[in-house]
Length: 171
Image (cartoon, rainbow, N blue to C red; front, side, top):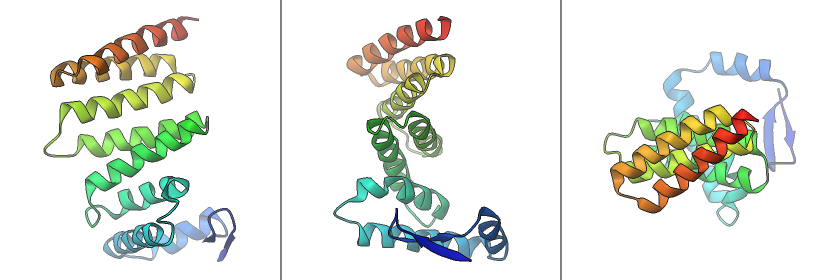
């Protein structure tokens, strides 16, 4: 049912169907608890190299909500996006940055500046992933949030990114 996963120095399900079958037999609360414990184990075991495991950590923290802290899930989803972007894995970066934005949208005490930064990171990932139209929309949202937060530098970056994304979408 499980096989060694040398890439992550652990184990993984042998097939997605095995994962689905096992998951279907576990109560939702228990599943969250397991994800929370896995996130804690990743943080503990890989504390000196968390960036290499940012994607896994982000996924488990998000799946553990509300047992895990939402801000931690946002922070690690954003970091996983940044790490993927640095590796030039732009589609992966988009997925992580989108998760960060979606998780942050559910935060009660949202800060427009933080929301703008997350939207900007997602927009850049979308642009580099070749999704010009979606990037333009995300840059526009980042600019709107930056303006609301009074973050002139982010507003300028988002506006310039939007212009570049528009040209990319047209070409």
